[in-house]
Length: 123
Image (cartoon, rainbow, N blue to C red; front, side, top):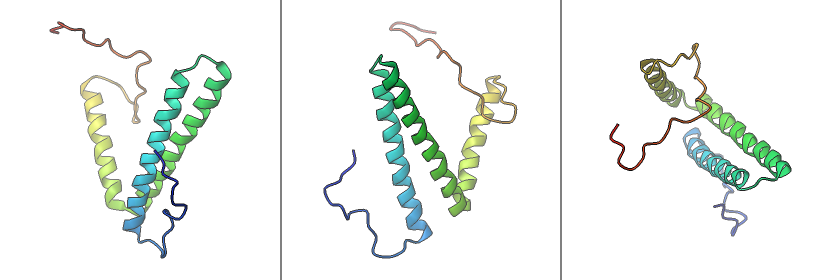
């Protein structure tokens, strides 16, 4: 959870190097992930349609922030970009092995998850 006890904790007394900025961006991404998780939890915990609409919109804005931060990271560190793309390639290979067509991009997840195994399920 955020810590606001010291209002100057986030201030830096000098300009950061790109390496330091990359570390800060990783922390920013962790904060965005936490916010997504919290807004999604609140969304799932209510049946109020207005609350659901507002919470889902805010959650999706946090997801857009994630995309912005990752894009900035890819700009700042080409080596990290190579690793991101390597990871993407591994997932694409796995999708292909599973027979999931991607049309060159990431395939959407199925609308319904696969049934979970039950206690005693040996399949």
